[in-house]
Image 1 (cartoon, rainbow, N blue to C red):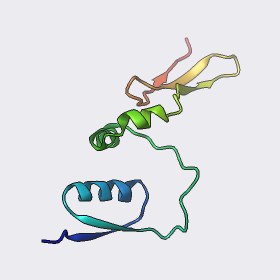
Image 2 (image 1 turned 135 degrees about the horizontal axis):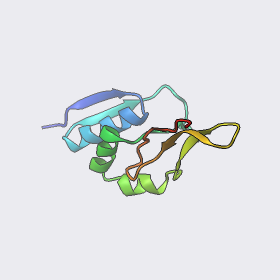
Image 3 (image 1 turned 120 degrees about the horizontal axis):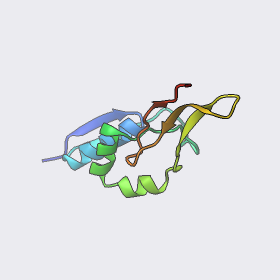
Image 4 (image 1 turned 60 degrees about the vertical axis):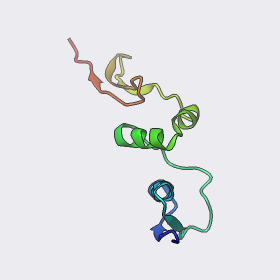
Length: 103
């Protein structure tokens, strides 16, 4: 019996992941993309929660983590040099939020 064919519109993150899982499930995905070429640079991708679980299931977590920017987070600093608010990154790569109140 031939594999069922599924048309996937878009070769971005979602389309590529969908095609991966369709192949794993026994389907034959055909990906169509309107862009004439691959992008050489992309936008920041926030891999947390469901996205991180998907990267793990695909088996690419180590590879993705090796390409990260190792961002430490960011902070808002007042004119006096004191931190007003911080957005540090935790061990899982997720941002948390802290506010410093003046005393």
